[in-house]
Amino acid sequence: METKNQQFFRAFNEAFVKGNSERILESVTDDIIWRMVGNDTIKGIENLEQALQGMDNGNQFELEIEHLITHGKEGVVNGIIHSTDRSGEQRHYSFCDIYKLNKHKDGKIKEIISYVLEI
Image (cartoon, rainbow, N blue to C red):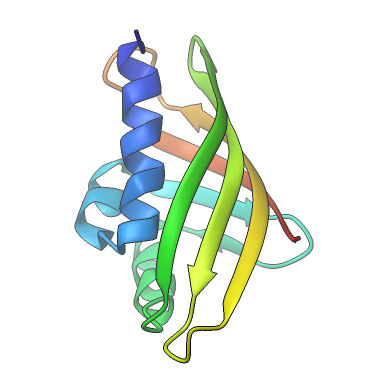
């Protein structure tokens, strides 16, 4: 049985693959920092909202979570994302996201560090 925080992080990751920007934005603090290692860092909820709009490219995504670990105000989720574009071409990405919440109970995400590799 998953803890409340594990359920929260699972739902957050599922919101990403479904393109549910509303769910994503309600799950983070206004001063969110999302560092994508080897790529960009997004600071602030307004910049995150703009980045989410740019992610809607018509691709279909499938999420496969391998590990979901939480402790206190921190969580880690890793797995694979399968992407299929409009022409049917598939790509696969291994990911690991490290999360920090602003508080333990009913917290919101204040920091994300993402590692993503195409496999």
